[in-house]
Length: 117
Figure 1 (cartoon, rainbow, N blue to C red):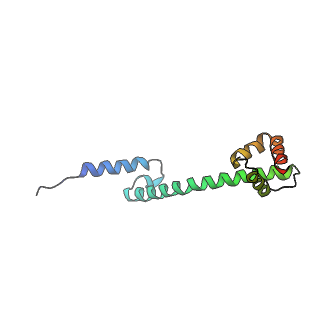
Figure 2: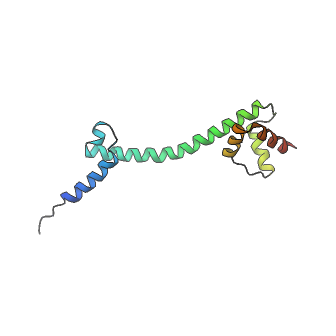
Figure 3: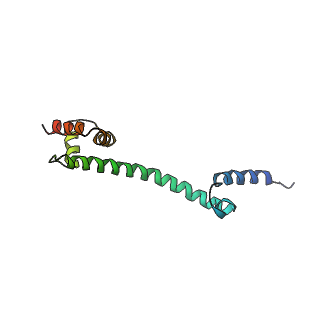
């Protein structure tokens, strides 16, 4: 059997991994084993935080809607507003409601009054 030299293939694989970790600090961008560990960690964190970002934005929208509703003096809370929206079959999601609450509070006030009737 002849000897198989795979230096070219291994080097290509390592340089591809190094390119991913080129912006990392210290040994995390130099040492191959550390690079692979940090690469796995970075990918896991990115995957986890993409889901977390969706959660955080939903929380922000709910907080904004609730703050505007309570400040308007309407006797309803956020949960009652959403419940009445679903009862009246008005399909406005929380993102749109939060934008309306920030940009045009009177419009949100009119929507809540229409729902109450």
